[in-house]
Image (cartoon, rainbow, N blue to C red; front, side, top):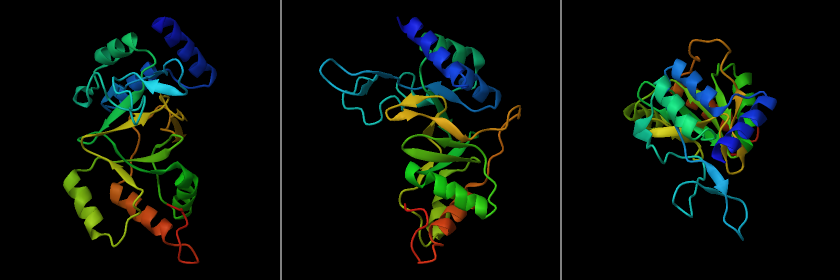
Length: 225
């Protein structure tokens, strides 16, 4: 049954012009981005609504969008391991283990995502890939350490409280993964054929977001964080 559902899932993605999870994971492997399969969605129990998570937590706060088995430390760029994982669980979400030599990310609420990107474009900010989900948009940035992030935030008089930082020891859900609320997609996709996507510096992105969020004519926030 799982194999049949996996084939149906891959067929739906091809119809949408999106790669299957294993293809997306293998592309990350070629970029030297360490990935692993996340916990998947499953139908909720009889008599309940919505969807649940394949992990044992009946009250999982992030169904289908977190590491479970294997754990985050198992993330790899090894093609054979990736093929084996997704042969067992073809519909599993693709999770990027952020930090170290891997990309990191700065995310903000989805409601502010389009305005944020428009403001950054207007300011001439060069962006790399941007992942959009129904709840949050994530701007991928070059790797940074926790110490540098701490120094960066300490130097700022104010940073929007709704920003989240996906760095060392963190993870990010990548397209075409599904979680509660909908599917992850590339709002700004990696350039086709690139050896590895270009990534902006975290300080440049944070500076631009802070400037954009405080530059409304009436002194309020243009991005409505």
